[in-house]
Length: 203
Image (cartoon, rainbow, N blue to C red):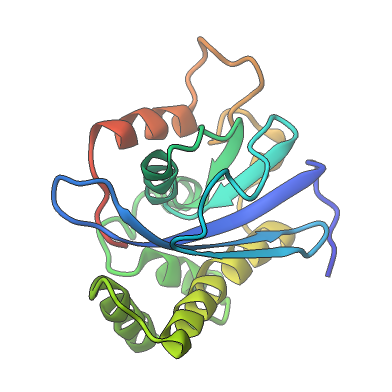
């Protein structure tokens, strides 16, 4: 259902990838959901070229543990989005790091806000399937794409639209990168720089 947001375009996105020690991630797929129009984008590996969604200052990108998403941007040669929110950083701030280091943090965040999502066993099984590195059958490809969509997009969209995360939409002190912000501290830009200097772990 379309929702009213302070940005004209707001995309929730999630990548699946294989992380190998010392290497950029091997991107498996991307699923993104535009919250105002309801549009979905699903891209499987081998289909990537330019970013399939805008990354300009009129578009907000939302992720959970965005360092993983930006590592995939880097691996694909894509530019950093102009405006972004990392809800993992926001959730960690709100809970004072109470869930830091726990397994499957996005599921813990969903449970914290009483948001229905998948079982940890299913997430673990899908994660193991992805980490095999393929090849995957057509049925497995659809299953991975559906898993990617089911895990992040509804969780994130529900948090934002229900106002369960602090009102970072209007605040540049959080992980939103303000336009022409070259000197002020921005956690999202800091995450981007850190991501460029190290390799991600599988979530």
